[in-house]
Image 1 (cartoon, rainbow, N blue to C red):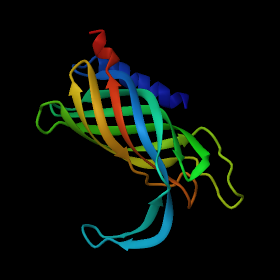
Image 2 (cartoon, rainbow, N blue to C red):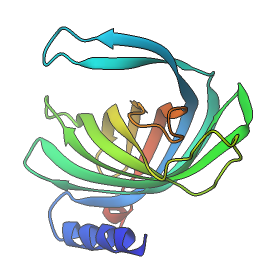
Image 3 (spheres, rainbow, N blue to C red):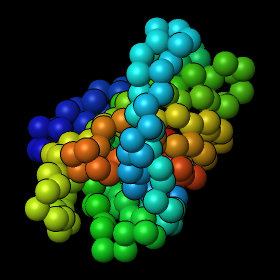
Length: 195
């Protein structure tokens, strides 16, 4: 864990030397759910094909996330970013389950119109910080994986507002629960306030 934080701070301090790089705080309001596989199998005929398994949401709960982020420009319209944040995932159908997770999400920003309107895509991992009680047949996974898809508008040097989702890719509990969420968030570029 301390190595991850060390890399983040090294990346952040290095990026502060570049123009338009940011490091700051992030806050999200999320609608989270735990998805359960429903046993349906889908055959994907388009693109590269393949087989995927269907899942059902167990209802949505409102939760909050807080963390830090950094971005550094790759070129005039693209940025590389990293989010490290804490959040909880719950579901109304399973009131006794509460997953507290540290999430690490590298992502790419793309501003196609050059007007501070960004599209983001990334892949992250979540490290569970608690161990909810399960039946003896369930095994908790150590790390789950998820995607990041969002749109954002940035008021340069003031704040960035984002709307998006973190769709689950790998179960947080083996063969059972997949964390997924939609969110609205704000990022405050603290490094810009002191320029």
